[in-house]
Image 1 (spheres, helix red, strand yellow):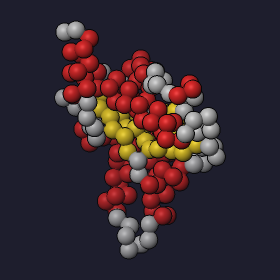
Image 2 (cartoon, rainbow, N blue to C red):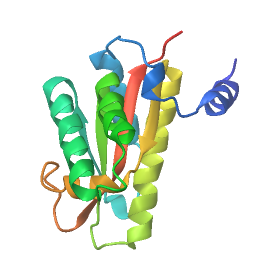
Image 3 (cartoon, rainbow, N blue to C red):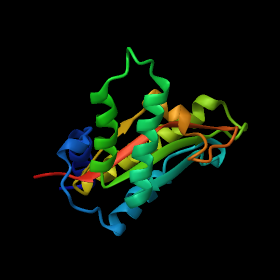
Amino acid sequence: MNKAEVLKEIIEQRRSIFPKDYAETEISQEIMEEILNSATLAPNHKRTKPWRFKVFKGEEKANLAFEMQEIYKSTQAPQVFLEKKYNDIGFKINKADAVVSIVVNFSGMVPEWEEIAAVSMAVQNMYLTCTANGVGCYWSSPKIVDHLKNSLTIEENQKCLGLFYMGVVNI
């Protein structure tokens, strides 16, 4: 296959794969670095590199799961709180091998939409690299990520656009 055919195949195979379909296998450090490096190759106007990623694994990931569950619980009125949703938040984070926070850093040098678009292209590069390496992934943007400002040490000119879940795919 030539490069164009390989690229077409990867693009056609790219899809969101959810944590319930992840194996209990760790993503190698080499592949994690490849995934994150591919994100930094995304085009960005004036080279602002507006993406900020933080990888959560192990205990940090477990703490993130607990924090997000507590945020959900504290932001829902009792009559709309769903125990299933509460449990699902923890399950998805804990089932993933790694969770990456997706944060845009607004430089003020270009329109904000351009920096959001650049971050989106960076995430697409991550999706394609995951697909090429047999890693399942998906981008989730629940409203509760707005409350992660302190734990992600998000600055005034930044906004969390969601979480990127990754795990080796069950075959």
